[in-house]
Image (cartoon, rainbow, N blue to C red; front, side, top):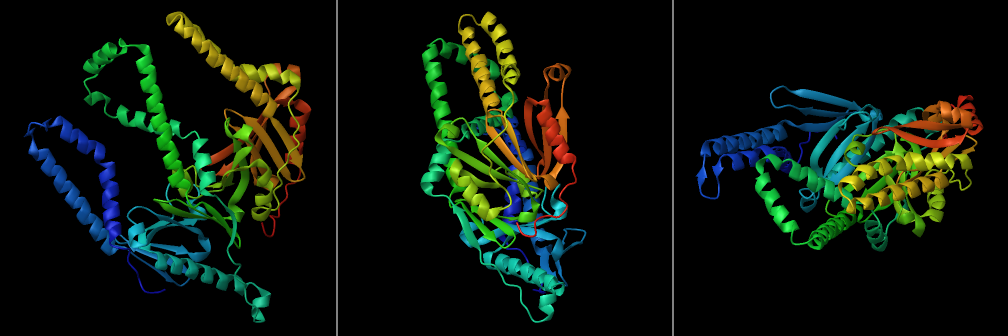
Length: 494
């Protein structure tokens, strides 16, 4: 693969669309602020300037496509690019951790993929080490195979058996988990995606508040509210149902065809319908496991399992990237993990905080709710009294947090369980823990209580696991366990 290759020409269009998306808000401002566009009273000069800028951007995208080449040569992935100044980026093959593929709406009709090259150095960066915006699927597979063969050749140089003519066997890709459409629909129904849709709409409208006739709208709303509070409540309910329906559709599109494969020392996750994605996660970068159970799924016996990985730029843009098991029965988690990460054990027996911690859990969760209910009840009496129910709900959540909190030490493995709104269980190995903290206030010390916090390296900076208000002797036990000589050797094969 020594011949320099170019990206597909559609990459110029993709880059242009990205630029157009970033410039959408300024362009709308120009359209709105430059006269009455509905009556034809428009100042055309700014529009012509914008049109010229967009043509310039499109032209520069075409030139960038012409100047961008990549090739495999002398054990390196060599990329050359640059509009004015020619830049060269040489990435040694042994530094490449994985190639992640994704197919957007521009890629799929033409059988193209976007390739993100992940290295150890890209762990803390917002972007991948390198990106090939659009290449043919066959070329992406050839590139992946060439990288594998190059690595195999280097490894065989250090393998004594290879000197005797032995060959490294390629392990076949094994499918370890897949979701049916029924499971995906159930996951979509029990997810909390409506909040994401509502917040997205709120952010969108906040960008245009200065352009709207707020005073007129406010007066219209006051007149409308006089029609009746039931009409307002019904409208809000309809909008929430629409947001909920949109979130269900988005979840189905995101997780359609979800499958997990084990390929030698890599974990491969594929998913997506409109936009297909394939993520490759080296097993040696997995720092721990997080199991989550929300308020709806927990009574039904379902959970989701997420991998905590040491890095990768794709993790910063999509929180769903490392969902190993998006929704699965709790009792089935252990069986799947034994295939993927056999040295991790799913524990069921936890040491819980003492009963004297219960008051602290309830106060920690509910004090703000009851404090906010006081002014709301006074200024909006009698309807404001309903806000007390919010404090009661938070108090119940505090009681649930107490019941769910716990810890377990099993040889070189620590498991911490806690709850905010979602119940979270972190499972981690001692040699993966970055730091461990024991926290204790004056009043906790008098009660013989303390809290433990443990951090792991994650693509988003760090992952924090904790257990609050546990027996002080238990937190001392965990700290002593962590202070002991760490296991320096990683498992030979995970």
